[in-house]
Amino acid sequence: MTKELDATVFRNGFLNSFDFVLTDCDGNCTAVLMMLMAFRVLWNRNEAIPGAKETINALQDRGKTVIFVTNNSSKSRYEYHRKFEMLGFKASVDRIFPTSYCVAVYLKSIHFKKKVYVLGSSGIGDELYSAGIPFLPVGPDPMPEIEDWYNWVTNELELDSEVGAVVVGFDQHVSFPKLVKTVSYLKDPDCVYIATNVDEQFQTDLKHLVIPGTGAVIRAVETVCGRTPILLGKPAKFLYDCIKHQYPDLDPSKGIMIGDRLSTDILLGKSIGLRTLLVLTGVSDLDEVERCSNSNSENEQRMVPNYYLPSLADLGQLMGVIQ
Image (cartoon, rainbow, N blue to C red; front, side, top):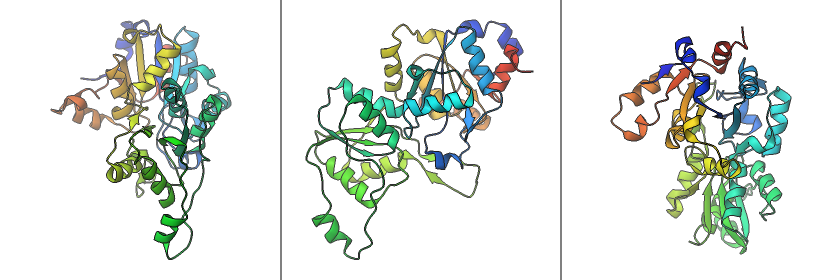
């Protein structure tokens, strides 16, 4: 059963139990969608969650290696780095791991030589460009306002014969032409199929809205072409493999995962042997924790965090850096 990280737990050596921290940042979305979102670990929109900056910086001041991991593929590492600096977080580019970067790492690891088709955002394109991997332009690809759409698709929509991989991430410009291209490229069984994450929907502050996530698009593609993608983001372990490649001496028994979502953050942490800390400023709540605790599903049992806190500020208070 999960425990609240209270003063007793803290005094019993909590800080000495880990050397490094993996922490989530925000939800998997663009800056525009962020305005509606309730995903909150380090920041909400363009404001740091109260106490998050002080807590994360204090952990680093006390010798902890803090690594930032997110399923958000809409930004590159360098865009994230600018945001961290703007909000006052201590962060270097080599400790920031968005799934956009994981895409480039994965393709380099398999010595990929062809072109990439991206159903996603510019962050993926930026990372592919930095890695020297060719890709087709990223951005809107709307359906023309015509009556005979079938004739246009079958006679005028063009495919690039040099495409050898498809990447699906969050794309606010999803369109029929993009879906046609995606599943048509994937008809070739040798075409590599990558997904940044499978989050089904976004939590928002507007309770009347349901906003589909990347997982909804992946399910549509799977329905048409019958293929399952190579998943790079949480809870898949490849994201941690990227980190281990850069920091090979990390020992999972000396690490902790901080996040706001049981099915991604906490499940990843448990899968790789980390302690886990759920903050209640985002997606999951204690009702969900209790449901998973009482579940007969082994997978849901693995989503139960070791500890929980209302927010990172509470950890900062225990550390004495926040009054």
